[in-house]
Image (cartoon, rainbow, N blue to C red; front, side, top):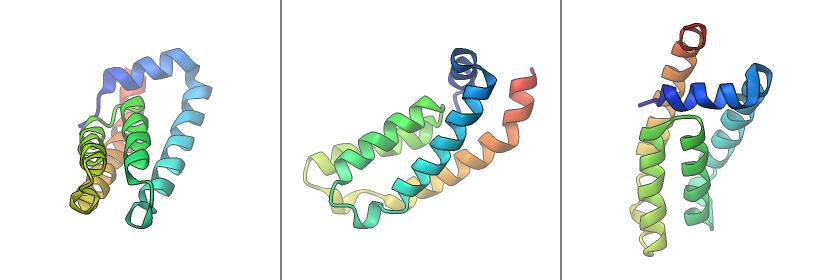
Length: 107
């Protein structure tokens, strides 16, 4: 569910202080966009943005669902995008990420 290699690579690229800031911004902006999806007139663009953000922080399962949502929206099937699955995947990914992050960074 989490690509810890991606997470560690990001942390090494930006340093610990930068990493903490990236994580805080990611979580805030992701949740903001996620909570507005059901009323978004730009679902395809929002799915694309969420997909990129999720990949940056290693939330691969969530990114895959966003990619599928982006594809469906691009094909005119926005009403078939499973927003509940995306919300659930993000919540699960975030919980695992926050629970395991300290140990992963210490290793």
